[in-house]
Amino acid sequence: MSQSVTSAANTDSASDRLQALGLALPELRDNPYYVHHRTVGPSIYISGQLPYKDGWLQGQGTVGRDVDLKTAQELARHAALNCLAAAVQAVGDLDRVRIVQMLVFVASTPDFGQQSQVANAASELLIEVLGENGRHARTAIGVAGLPLNTPVEIQMVCTAV
Image (tube, rainbow, N blue to C red; front, side, top):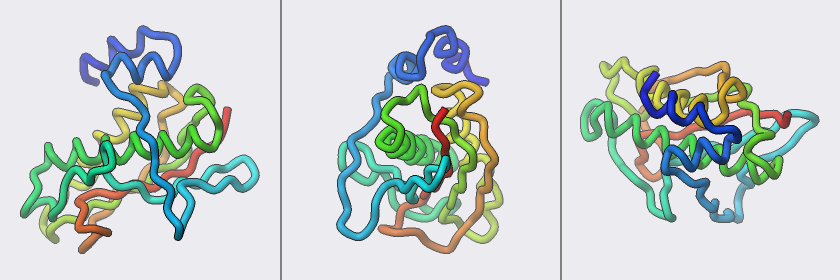
């Protein structure tokens, strides 16, 4: 894992680790058509999140044609951060969030084949911030297109600890 994982892991709380990474949870804008999360029993279902930062979509295009792997990985980290923000809305505290499953959609060319490498960036962020509570089951798939022509969308299932 990266050096940031090692340095961030030396702090106590998930919020401290997030701050050590130079990140903060974004505010999610309300949408009249869906909610960012829905709790059913112990499970928290997080709606698909796009790589928004400060209200702006951070990229558009198709990975493998318009968007390179490194950029797609950064976009996946933004989307995962938005998922964490939705999870905190549901449970109230980042330290109570446990990721169960993550589904990563990558708008990519048919021959791209590195969707798992895009997803790895989001997985790494979750582990950096949440430690063992960030480890999860995961699927990464390539798709022909995503909303607003974004390269990455992430959906999660979480639980409160």
